[in-house]
Length: 248
Image (cartoon, rainbow, N blue to C red; front, top):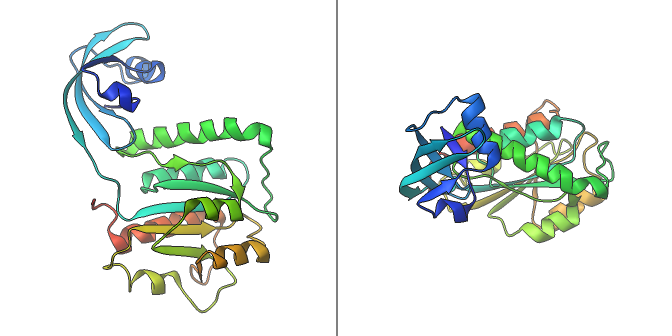
């Protein structure tokens, strides 16, 4: 059983678990006093603990030992053009499972999906909850940093620098993504940025902004992939080429 707590709480010898975590343990997993659990702060901190008191919606745990786990290497940032409906939720979930370090939603002038300013804070909280649940399910020690949706110029400016910055562009015909991965898979690639457009793709000006920031245009093969499929494809390819299950 894995529960997420704040870093300050993980430093305590005994602690009350957050209400949502306590509810999940008691009412979903049917936990009992004396059972062992793993506490995680979402930033690499882990602790082996034991449940010492269980009440209706209150659970107390006692820490037995602590340890640290490193981030997946290389660190991967996904710049994802905003997509419609639950597709963005799905991308957040799968990106967390595949070890993304950062998720930066990008607003595009050509995107079908629009997120009003009044809804941005609530949507970020939803995405963070999705990422936390995904990390709990897959056993990840790190939860990706999730940023507010912003323009391409703002997202690129705030993020860098990257060892490798890729713009996945269906109009790029000559350079496949593997041509960038394979020569670098054994090198000193510490950070990779991946830029994927929305359903309507990025505008020429947005692509130019990414290129000026150092992005290299690549294609993902002869088929035109949906935005959510492209994200899963690239993150899986990075795992394959760079061995992201190893840690540094």
